Length: 372
Image (cartoon, rainbow, N blue to C red; front, side):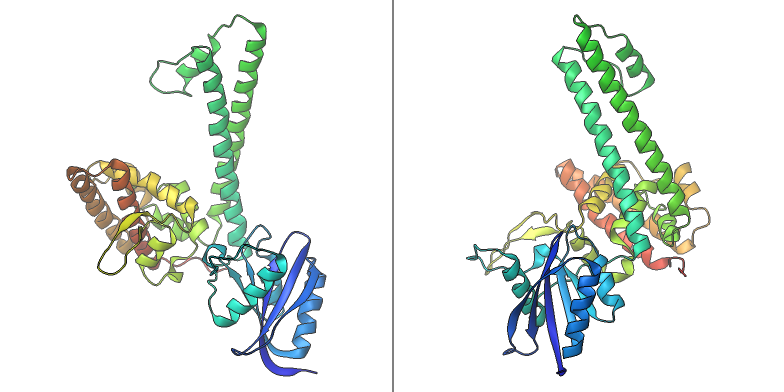
């Protein structure tokens, strides 16, 4: 028999199965564990159809994780509410030491009913695809860095240190070709490392080209172009920021964006005592990293370089004005903080925090392309 009520459904997802619990509306509503179902889409559809026959309204939730957003999209297509929950923000009792799928599903259902869960932003399939491509390029870059480190460690073990200006240049390559070893096997090791580096470089170059090609026809292309008006935000930095953050209109204020990026100080205050510590490092670490890398450019005086002028061609005057205002302020702030004796790493993070605010302002001036 159909009940004219709303229920809250907690889903504990894994690769092969989903544990399901429901909580009826109201403080005294029953909370019960339904059981485990297969994680296949047809099994999920049968569950949703069965629950919809018995209840007027369904509100689903599950933790963000490796299973992705496919479950969320399927449930919303079926016409029901579903949120993907931030795992780090789920309230937990300090004394709890038992964790099972059943308990997790029951906890999610109860907390969802109480309104204690924080939902994460779910990108559309196109945005998610671009983000995965950007992350694949980042993984290729990390593989290249690791492979180069292996070669450098091998050379250092044998007392070979390059004394030139920069590594991985033509001069460095000539120096590698001139290395001689006592044992023939060591030549094989050197050759293998160099081959691995060459393969990693080709992969990185290929993925970088694919990112540029895909972004050109992406709906967020105008936003990426506008972000590049800001000093320290080159193409790949802008792409990474937009792919990870999405549309900044979802943040009501720049402070929300700063907090999401984990660039605000942690705090442990009680009574009249106020104690602030290092940045929280919460939220999206990839976007935070590229902003901190870009913040280093503000250690030089403010000026409109040829490259910045080229990036701003065709942009709205409001965007260019914000970018110049940001550059003047951030370069001056960098010098003032350094003059106070602050550590350079601390100053850079402070600049990155303000860069996020200016990117928020620029993002509010530009609208993405409409998608059909």
